Length: 344
Image (cartoon, rainbow, N blue to C red; front, side, top):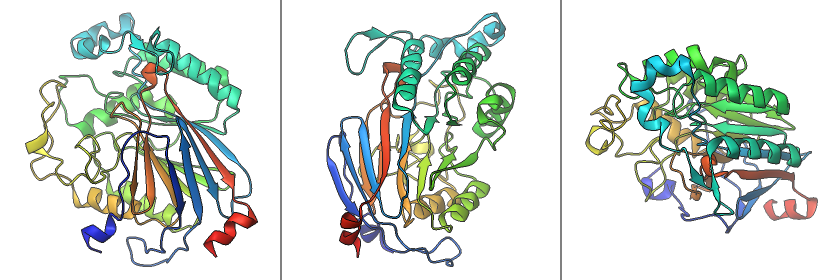
């Protein structure tokens, strides 16, 4: 498939537009086998609300998507790491509320978000990374206590800050593995930290850790396996997938990602992105995602602004930072017989 045909349309800008009807064409998986029938769906947006109507869905599913809370709470246990946490400990101490314009802060914003999730009686709270500004024991315990008290069903994947102490030696793979095990492990609820699946009322939510911008071979196989089931899928990631016209912040699969465009490695105290750019596995993951006939959408964070792109008929939504109180309300509704006729 040539590049022009693959990226059939890119819709950029803020939410608040109708994305219309989509029936992604049947496509093969990475093996070229298991042809999967497309699922008719419509998606529309109003502000921070995203509404799907899905052909064949039997029950409604409600989700609250959250990213980039950047909690910085710390205590005496973190003093030994203070030289690595100093910059991010001061980055989001005070913010401006996304709706009211009033002063707020990450702790207040997160607690209010949990209250909202309870009020909406959501089926899933999707936590897509950078919930923490660094892997503070105090902050992780604070979040766990509130999540357990809320009783909410949640799915968490890490962001690039969740496991990163700036200036600490080690590659992104090494540091992610170390701090995911030492600090973040309870949040994975016994699941693989790099990938997890949660099926809710007929929709499968896949949490995929791309917080170092890359995808592993195991993750690619995991995605393809779920793609080939033919069930409706939703992908939750931290780093947005590449869409034409977007900056390298939309860096998972971005063709320019790599050494030459990495401007922040020194500021962020990390290893510079590789000279060779993305691995073939990451590029293959991008192709698999945007040729998925049953993928309802990708939901991401990281860039700290609310956006939507349409790539090959598949929408990708980026949620504004929860440090300001922001989130996305998602609803997946059964499609009526009348509307299903549009896809016959």
